[in-house]
Length: 475
Image (tube, rainbow, N blue to C red; front, top):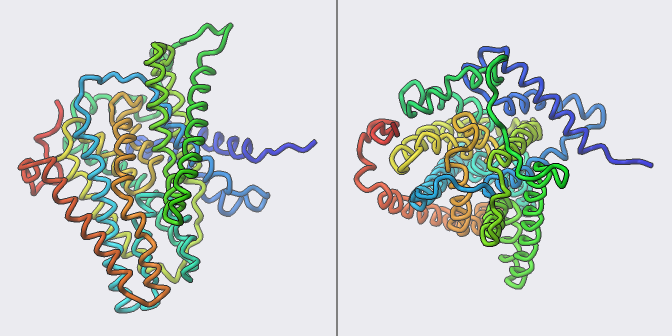
């Protein structure tokens, strides 16, 4: 009898990389100094192996992308199922501010992409396809999955290389996210962007080596909420998470059935929902949590145990997502890629700290770290960076992001519905499609200006010459 070993082979290889990365982090001062998470180290260890070595033995990276996709949703379910410890906070403003910054970043990256693309088309690369402009925000802000999927869908317009170029942008985004993100954290610490308590936590020995020193008291990782002779507590928590994920799958299936009568637009929208299933996973997690409260049995959920499940998911997810990146570089596009990435990377690194320090009412530095991660890599690498400054997800930052992601998606539906317009301009030679896309971008720009001013008021202009408004740092 033959059984499939693919999943367990991938898990074993990822586990070996994580163990290796843990040893490397504990011994190499460079990784300790820049607080690089073990999962990112492990991902880059595996990147050349999954591209050049393991394929020679019949092991491919085809399952890694799916693994990262599912683990992303599972991590958000485990986060949203926790009992809130910050019930008295006013959350609406920070959730809306998060959505505004996400939209601002993606629209800013799109504007850069459009500008660079149109300049290249008008000068040295008249053969460059118009939708090249969207691959920067797709690769940076959406990640390799959506960048590749949407790029491949443009083949119907005669564009053959967009999927591979999207992966290239995503790969560069991962590098910027990991190295640039850690540099930004260290720069912020050096410049005093972080509160004294958070700074003291980062300076603990186990925060640099990654291992709790021998002979010291180890922190409690989780607590039992069941009797083990009936059911193990970890089993109960994993069952609750996986049931919620099944509920998410059924909900997305139902949405697809309901949208089908709307025609091609409804089908396209339903397909896009699958690409952001983590948002629906978080919403389903909230529904299950409210049901537990309704039946007054929410006490069976142990927050530290849910921390462990989300931590496991994120570590595996980040490693697999980085290892899944294809290193096939399309050399004929290297010049526009380099120009777009350089400009886009610099603008993103300056824009997010500037806005975060002016729009958020609490945890501005921690929120900035997450937003930079999701705007250059993916949500998985953003969560990995977040764990550097919030290891146990003790702040509401991750959960607030899950709420804002849903809000952001619905505000971004017009952008999604017009994402194929530049490809139609390339296929038909009719520039009106490109200018219609530009019109939508300009409409978002007006919305951004109004939204930012409504959130910040006159506070937007305090310390306007500074990258970080130090007046808002929590003591």
